[in-house]
Image (cartoon, rainbow, N blue to C red; front, top):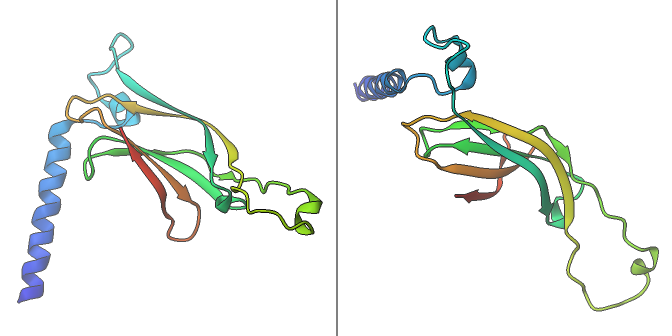
Length: 148
């Protein structure tokens, strides 16, 4: 009986979320272009987020990463991911393996993503852009997050 109640509550929650999405209208560019009310003379406002370069910690050397950009508040946002990029392994001088010196700060590694994420500007969304760096792995998780 408890399980049946939980399933009913989940179904009601999902139905409510779907009806909210229908009220908001299209939230992605392809959905907007499929709308019958959009023609060649219609003005469509988009938000472009350019993900060019990142300076990463050397602990990420040799790993594959991507940037996830989200537009809108949590649980009501639209996302875009960049292509995966391999973080290069910096070359250390050969002498560094033999000469004992004071530990130095690990070098930062520059990575070029060269991507642009486009979002359909929507009056229902607050102008919030959230950015997360993900390590590409099974089950992937965020390495670092930032919000504006």
